[in-house]
Image (tube, rainbow, N blue to C red; front, side, top):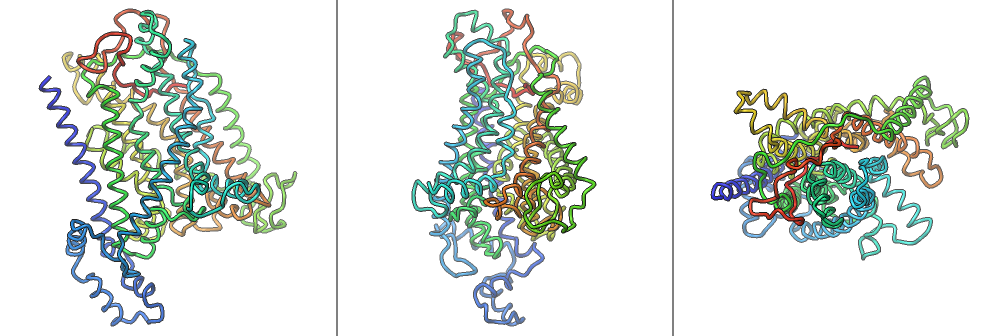
Length: 615
């Protein structure tokens, strides 16, 4: 028991240190940005403050001296930190006004929006997991989550925001179209953020419930006479322990990734604050915004860690989990879903690739017809041809980024608690802001955009890989392998990797549409692919302004994005999954209680649950 308490304290300290050091590194990088970038911040400040002055060497030298740029990044960062310790976030390089009031106001707005979006996400997730919970209560076979969660996750946030703006605010005049004045102005942006996030959480949790419901201890509890609600509570706690880190990362991502939604609805949140500071190279304001966002990410990450330990009853001892019985089979729903979506994508490419995606040979915004199945865009170009040619430019880089993120997740999973801090801090960085920073260091390019998106793609996969690895190591047969003379490297390659790679790849495929959209959004901002490249995200951005009178301009690329997402996840889920066999309910096949002092009654909750690839 003393060793267990010491281990808990040690891992908690390591986790806290990981969060704090990661936040410090992010702030130091932001502080050194003027010295790392290829542009002169003095010129940007001169244009912002004194637009009438010429950028002469004398004027630029005066700005550098006034801002203290000539003394190097270390002196500038130390001076800023000295002010922070006194409660002063500094003054803006652009306006000269104190940064603190505006930064705290932006944080409060984003925190409120995140709270409303989180409520919407939880409601959507609850609707998605309701069938799985009913199957647990009625003792029926689980089928995993359906394609609805994938489709919701594939909805681009800024596209959903624009559609809600046009339909609800403009057409129906039910809610205000922009601003931040009260509860009525928070409904539409909260839905735009919460629906995709709820689709992701609902799918992950539904798959976890389907996997946990097939474990031996569930049958033992039923044989012991446990009531339905008690059994459901145990299944939910077991499944929630596996993905609680994902909940924390999603909430952090809602806080830091709402830039596009805040732009659509003109919300003065922290995302717009950070983006404006980065574009203006207002380094003190950028550091202040990152400090507040990093602090919030640290708080949410620590809360998620505490919740995970509570759900599991502490660290998992070796042998705490039993090996789920193997059942090799494929869901007919998955086969049909994969077949339909893949056929749709192949049809789009077969009929669209022979068409010229750049030729302006049709009427502007021409409606769909037999000759133009997807209609024409605002320039009179064939949308079917542009969508088909955009497949390689959108999907191929996104798949490469996802695979790199999975590899990074596997590499960092072995570090345990040390990797949680970098994951939370990187996840809190909006992709657009990461693109601005990378472009400042490497210059605008497709490679720079890919690095920026990878920056914010690996954290959830790393956290998921760490959770899966922890639970795989807790299985009984893993404990006995070293005593049998099996080397550690062989254990990892032959026993641990096969247990964690399939669900991790499936999770990566679930994030494929978001990666593709992030790449396209950076290209639209001039940080990646440039128009008139037929990229799906660029097509969405170009068609948003015409969605009211020509909805087909956004329907075609959005349909392709949803088809790609559903197809990728369906194909990934068709791999052999773990299901209970007929003899899985034999006595002795159950798991250990959640904690060392738990009593073996019907209310005891088993230790955490692995999120297997189960459909």
